[in-house]
Amino acid sequence: MPRTERTLILFDGSIVSVLACAAIAEEAARDDAAPRGMLMLFPPTHAADRRLSVVLQRCADLFAMEVLASPAPDEAGSRSPGEQESHDLLAAGYAGARQSCTRILWPVNAAAGEGLDLDRIAAAHDRSILVSRLVALDAGQHGVPGLRLDTPYLDLSDRQVADLAVDMDLPLDQCGWWEVQPGGQRDRWTRVLREAGWAFAKTADAPR
Image (tube, rainbow, N blue to C red; front, side, top):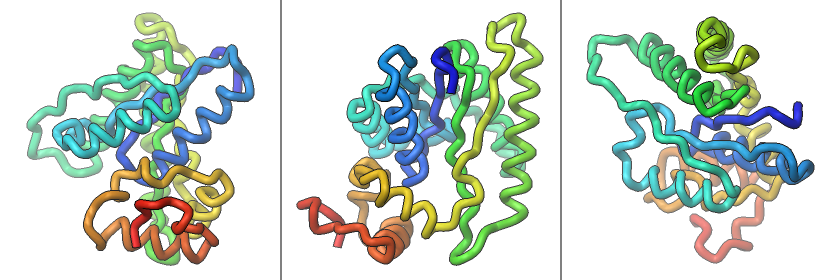
């Protein structure tokens, strides 16, 4: 990664978004002159979730990153999920460009049980390329001609994500599901992480 590159991480409290924070912080640690990353709650509707806002700030403090406010969500209820996602990604891309970010890291993941959602992979891949190109069209105004939207975790299975988390000794208490009641994401990741060799007992308040 070039020394001058600055990354905006789209943070939703998922394990892959925390992985993205750890990876960018590790890159910055290898080169003190490299700019640190920035965090933004994504999608913008997450800004109304006080619990997730607290998780975001806690993660920003841990990894010494700035927080960039999410674009204000609108009330276009007639949009399809895909249209809304494109709209939100485009807004995030422009917001990052205005902060001189040359890379937007979208930690989207298409794992579906033991397999992968191929349609989701194709749609997210195409959307990331098209949004990058659209934002780059206005480089003369925001000054970032080479902005790109990356999806490094898109085609990783749950087990591959868990293996990465174990290898990086990821602080799982930074995940949005860490302190919630059993079920959903917490049960899903607790099971897979145990299978990957994670020792939950090393954290006093680990979910059981």
